[in-house]
Image 1 (spheres, rainbow, N blue to C red):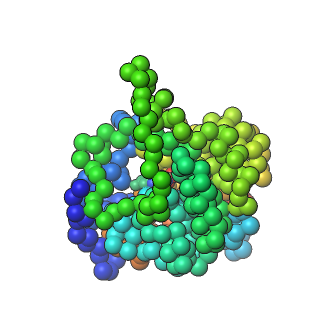
Image 2 (cartoon, helix red, strand yellow):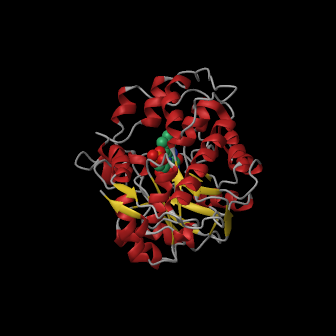
Image 3 (cartoon, rainbow, N blue to C red):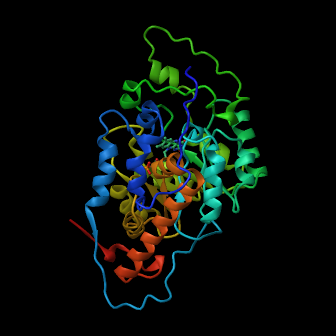
Length: 370
Ligand SMILES: Cc1cc2nc3c(=O)[nH]c(=O)nc-3n(C[C@H](O)[C@H](O)[C@H](O)COP(=O)(O)O)c2cc1C
């Protein structure tokens, strides 16, 4: 294992950093190349990664002029929680890869901008420490562990630390084929660790016959199933959201299980390649699950207009993954706060200029597909 590289976040935000994409452009200067490739990259040929951007770009906003927008605002309510804007920080592993204050810096930014932070199971700060820097309850992203007691212990810690929701990620039981990160020789540097998994019991080594598959009988033999979700739902009072749903039939199944919400997501194009974007599946899933179920969506959100489009297509809120880690690398907590402010202000500008002053005004009528 190599030692962690020196970090070089900026002490001041330069005046020419004015968009989320500016942060993405500057990010490679603030981290070693292998780390950048791990963060920026996607699965296999990155068709899904590119598809996320292309899917958003296929939609345009059809503005209505001369509307009275003076009562406008981006506030919303999700799972009983007040949100200043429908933009949530997606769970992202290993913030310490890019900044010494790691998830604590991100939490400070989330508090400053009244933004919900979804904290990854693979965080590099403890569940409790991150919560102590947040002005409003975070959500805990859970990767279900092979050992059920250990999984439950993570859930109990999140409950006791005041987290408001369990977001169970269901699309990453296996690592994607991460060729870009592999080519760059990415490995976790010394000192970067999933600290909340320290007490995880050692995994029993599967002994496979020569005719057995390392995937099916090996890595997937203990992967969670619908039964595991039901088991967990019965053991927590927190609302459960499933992250990584794309198929409308899975959305229906989750609803039948009593799951409170879904994140329509392809994991930022990082898991299976050649799968659709949230943009393409969201309308169908909204139609199937009805207006009440909480739906979030993510993938390539980097403009207020992207937030607007996903809301118009059926999302209640959106999540941003790479933008938070790029802005953290470039300028630490102030960078993440700045990135969130840019997105919120761009969303406000878009809503005002489209003639849809409240989130509830934004619907399919505000878009055309090109
Ligand atoms: C570096 C990196 C690490 C991630 N780690 C996690 C994780 O620990 N848990 C999870 O559910 N999703 C994880 N994701 C996926 C994000 O939550 C989110 O779905 C995705 O980044 C959204 O796409 P975007 O990066 O284009 O905004 C990660 C994404 C990136 C880029």
